[in-house]
Image (cartoon, rainbow, N blue to C red; front, top):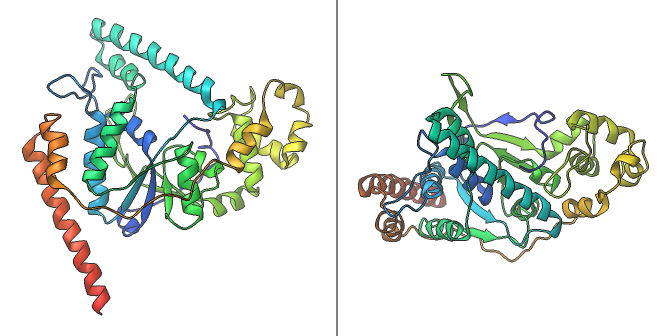
Length: 343
């Protein structure tokens, strides 16, 4: 889930064409879970191939990546590496939540309650190692780079934005802000029409840009104070302090603007059992690397069809139609670059 800062964030809406020509680091695991949660049948069952293997993640990855490429956006998918030992409790807690949701999903299916079934099914999805390998193979066939981070994918992507390799991090979570990403884009992989919960109405969802400098300036805080807010409200490495949400945390760090002052503040008794210094360093001094390749590859049309159509029973007609559009847009983009070169 990441750190919850939505009540403090004021993002700027974007159109896709404003991102044309930009290299954007995509939090790969984040988007795969999005696809697995949202691309399901009415009773919550994920899409599957003729052999009963889940394909929701491949469906979302293919169509969304093709759309980004058609807009001239260059996505670089950054996958999580080895999780920090402090994340162990969070990982175990998520497993229990998914197991519980899966049981509730099956129960709702038996009752014929499709609405409840789909709700619980969306929280039950698991991304396996095989699914991540399939995703990387598909991206490679599409000519899109993927990177394995040493640890947290968002930390690596944020580092690459800071050093100028990428324009922004794309994620639904706000962790990239704590990792110091100068620019974060939300809704890049989920934009479109979204149904309002409990209603038959839809809203249009567009990409949103969060610029770290403007965000900190608006709140009148430093990067150190932002990390402290993340520690207080809770994150993937520590549960946070009970009863403290984003706004209370903001007030507290303005009064106590350093880690030491927070540790010795009026809430110090509530911090027992929490290791704020270690978690602070996870965000302030993340485990990242400068060894990576973000140069785009070449579209391998036949390999894309082998993965999707031959291996997983996707419609040849639909995949061919999308690859035709993609090849046309890629050719148009190359011609445009050549024209600029000779002007």
